[in-house]
Structure formats: C-alpha cells, structure tokens
Image (cartoon, rainbow, N blue to C red; front, side):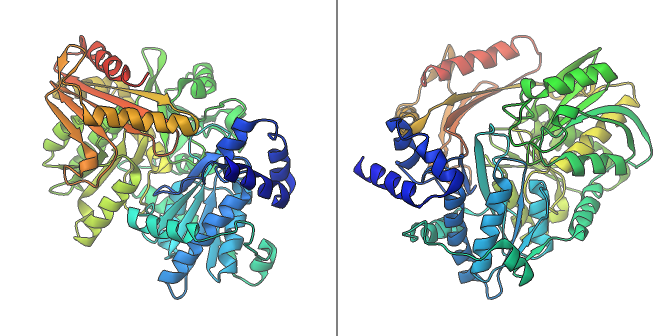
Length: 555
C-alpha cells in the first residue's frame, strides 16, 4: 500500500488541469485510490482499454504518452524511416489522446499520418496498409460505456499486433521509469514541420471503392426502408455515404444518435447488440414503417440489425447475421460465377458451427481461430503468403464483427452495413424477410441457438477471484452439466487444435458445446452455449440448462 500512496502523491504533484482535479476528487476514497494505482493499465495484443481518469490503472493523457513512447521506440528500432497512422472515434478524450500520441511519435522522428476528424476502425486498418505505415493507432473503447476509452495498436499489415510484437512493445513501455519525463513540441509545430500530416480524402475514397468491390448487388435505386443509428459514433458519414452510393434512397437516421457524442446520452451502453441501445431506432422504424435497422458501435467496426417480420421488429444475433451473410455471399457469388473453387470462411471458436454445413455445399473450407478479430486478420496474412487470398469470401465472430474483403484486417461495420442492406433488399424482392431466409437455412441444415452470459468481476480482488474459479474448473472439470454428460473437455491453454495457447475452456456435449473465457477488454467472464438440433423444440431450453449449470461455478 505504501507504493500506492507514493504513486498517488507523485501524480497529485505532477498532473495538471482536468487530470489533477480528477485525482483530488477521490482523495477521501482509499479504495478508489488503490484501484487507480495498484497496477499499470494492462497492455496486450489489443493495446490498452480502461476507465478514463488519473492514475496508472486509468486511461489518461499520461498513460497514453507512455504507451506511445514505448510503441514509438519499438517502431524506430524496426524501421529506418518509420511512419504511423492514427484515427479516433467520438469518445471523450479520443481527440486529445490521438493528438498526444501523434506528438510523442513526432518527437521520435516518426512520420505521423492522422485523420483530421473522427473515422472508423476499419478505415484506420486500411490507411495503415494503403500508406504503407509501420504501425497504426486507433483511439477507441469500441462498445464499452462512456466511462471507458482505449488505444488499439496495429502492425504494418493493418492487423492488431501479434503476441510477439506486443511483448516487445511492452518491454519498451516498462523500461520508462518516469511517466512525466516525456517531452514533446506542440501538434501545430509538428504540422508546420511536416512531421505530422493529415490523411487525404483520397484514402477514404479508395477505402469506399474497396467496400463497393465486396458487393454482389447492383447500385440501382432500392425500395427498402432503412433506419440507421451510428450510436453517436464514427459511422455516421461512411455508412450513410455507402448506402447512398449503392442506391438506397429511403434511409432514416436516428436524430438523437446522429452526431458524435462521447457521453452517449441516449445509449449509456452503446453496444449494437443491446436492445436498450436500439430502442430509439426501433421507435423510428415503427414510425417510418421501416423494413430494416442498422446500428454500428462508436468506432463502427461492429454491426447490429433489426428486421421487420410479421409487422414487428426483431433483433438478430451476431451468429444469425454471420450465417445469413455467409449463405448470401456464397450463393450469390456462385450464381454470378465469381465464387472460388474452394472458398474459405473464417470464424472464431465461440461462433456457430452451422457454417460448416453451409460451406460444405459450396466445397468450402471453414477455418476456426481464437476469439478476437486479430486472429482472423493473421489468418488472412497466412493465406496471402500462400497466394491463396482469392479463396477468402467472408469472416465473422458472434460478437457482431464481419469482414468480406482483404483490404482491411479487422472487422468492418461499413461493409457489413452495405451487405446486410443489399441482402435484405434481395430477399424482400422475393417477398421474404431475413427471418424467412434464416428459417429456410435452419430447415435445410438444422436449427441452432447460442446464448452468452457475462459475469463481471470488479477490481483487483475480482480479477483474482475470476482466475481462481477458472483454474478450479481447469484442474477439476465437471463430467456433467446439469443432467447432460460432458463428452469431451478441452483446455485451450494447452495449445490444442493447432491454435495458440489461450485461457479458454470448452465442454463438448451431444449436439452442444459450452465455452468459458475471460474477456480481453473488460473485467468480465464470458460463457457461451452453442446447441443444434433438427427440430427447434426444446433447443433453447437445452442451451439455457447448460448455461445455468456452468454459471453455478462462478456465482
């Protein structure tokens, strides 16, 4: 505790402005001080993510500068003329963090390419590749609540950093003794000296051209009525733009969620998979009698949708969207004669296995990777190295992330919005909704359901408790879940199924599997149940029973 209070005192003396005031405000709260200083904010393959505030375990201008200095040193050590691209979303302090990072990089003689305004994560991934940068930074906390922000780091391939690269960057970060010793010139002076320059609109146009290249439809005027919400994030301009370019004329934007707002006043949890975040979109869809709702998260890499079916809006899960898009792209590209002989679909291990049956009908191959789109991006890199990239058709994860083109190496809410809109129009022209098409898929390949439960473990003690409970199951896995026998237990920490070691446990049962893992971005445990059957009756209750049985080990 002495070191915690020592750090607290140093920060009180050396921070300025908002960050000093924020720390003064909690001086009468020992537990809060402990949580802010008991560790440094974790830097991993996804970069940083944490609550905004003063302290070593918070997202603030000083932790951003420290991480940027370590990342900058790493990039300089690997390249003779290094460059980095930067983008940011609508969150509080995203602009300030992005500009602070740019100043640090410029101080290390790294050429900085930064967007002049907020832009989506997929556009940052594209810019890194297009501008041939050595790294990229996206300031975002994705769909977390307003209290959070983050700092995602990308390699020269536009994919999030590999484990090996992250460890090297972490060593550079940890070697920085004094977080307050990092000195830079001003952003404006670096602009004048051209160490920092704004990314041109040409990059945006090339990105949009690549998005359109993934279309399997024409750009003729379309009759479908669409409600779109960017959830006060970075998706407003590019998603509205791509829909306009593809001929969608009846698009209504949720006015309260149209403009960037890091406080997310109408959606405190700006997650496009959450019904409460889409309540205003549903209200507008009912007023306009819209057929489809599209919703992107603040950095526009995820997409949630709602579909009008039998007069009411029904939200569709991430797995269901993945199933529909894979089926649509495979069938349409086959019909148009553009499908590879052996197409590849990539998914994460916690996403639906129904895709195996669909791909089989097209002589396709399904590749499973660990949770996180960085592993999908890495797999694309492997295909590229083997000159097999043309086989790639689609990638997805159950948490509402989708990719349909290799021009980016992360999930892309812009291309997903375009494809879902075109797919919905395609089936409406056949007097079908996406729900009707989903039912046809289930009738052909079998019914599937997936459930997800997140359990929060707060603070230092919470994280410790979560890991202890995971280890307890790892060391003594149950042979039954409820009344159902576990056929196989898998511990992915052992590096099984040709995958890197990861803290994931899996239980295989008759026509079902249950997986548990700690979240990579939040202090939460995630539990997934995936079940299948030739008939829908009892399927959901089966999944719920399995979920309840495994949950008992954690509460």
